[in-house]
Amino acid sequence: MLPVMAKTLLRRRDGTFGALDETARTRRGEYVEGAIVLTVWGVEVLDTTLWDDVDHLWGYLADIVEDLVDGKDGGTYFPDQPVELSFRNIPREHVVVSVRAGEEKRTAAAPKDALLDALRTAGNEFFDWLDHVAPVDSGRERAKLNHRR
Image: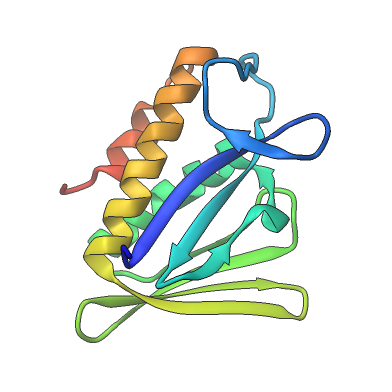
């Protein structure tokens, strides 16, 4: 088992979720509803119950990746949900990932390199898909995701 896995799932009109593919469409300027699934040592820290405007959420995560690479902690709230996501550097090159949604809190510690690799891979896959279905300028977000890679 990999220590960290991340992927993006798109929310369909019927409320179910599916993988990024060419059949899913969006138009420039539309919100892209979906979820980022982040699993650390088998613990789903993020899952489809925490869906939101995934295009904006990936932009926020790109900022956090850049902060983590620079040795800083990072955090954000989801774009349209009262969900707090935080990343805190701890000794031995690990990061504590925490999500708070109301009374529910999920926390897991991940090897920093594995976390960054999983987020970068999934983030770049999402921006590749977005550029294909609704050409946008994701250069800023990609630069942050791949900061000092």
